[in-house]
Length: 293
Image 1 (cartoon, helix red, strand yellow):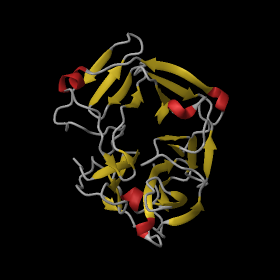
Image 2 (tube, rainbow, N blue to C red; image 1 turned 45 degrees about the horizontal axis):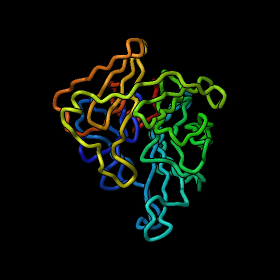
Image 3 (cartoon, rainbow, N blue to C red; image 1 turned 90 degrees about the vertical axis):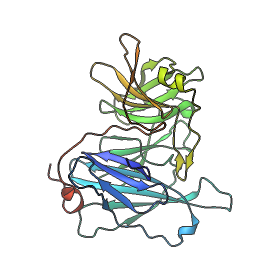
């Protein structure tokens, strides 16, 4: 259990974590390794930390360059009561290089939804953006280190979060009746290739209704800690794994239309969930040299 940390991303069995108390330092950590401790990453130095309003993160691996990179986008306070920040500045850290330090990429024009990128597709990190209207997705190329607008599906106002489903960028649409629509981009960066692949009917898990709990209301510095619905994974047989109100993990069967609660002993009343493929390799290939897989 790591109660004082939140996830930036999971890649090749390696987790990138940041402290919920402060944005620095970040850590990389392999929960399946023999080491009980993560490796602390270099801190980012900015001119005046008191002006930082929030920070948005990203973590990923590029299959051609064999490099892991961490991205930070810093938003600065524009007034005393500014809670979203402005004048964003992007930085990147390439892991396993001789000059293991943050590099400034410059200012960007996007208001990224935090706290971290939600989907990695085509070796690009992806975030929702608050200031692009229908073009509501921004990507970061892990090789060229360039930000780019990715066309979203139709009116993006009702879309909640991004997810990688079977290698495709997907966007989850929440409806007022509690149902969920899942849109998939079959050809990357081609707006016309977006289509609604399936829907998940409104469902309240039995374990949640027995608790009678209210949705999570706790917030953290860089964004909302919990959301009402989060799609996690689509299995080959079409079953969909999702998280309900940060309290219940559920499987939806697209064929039968049925739901199955996933019972996991020892979980706290409220938790986060993400997809992680474990590995027994050391973190040395990440922190000291380039990945050779």
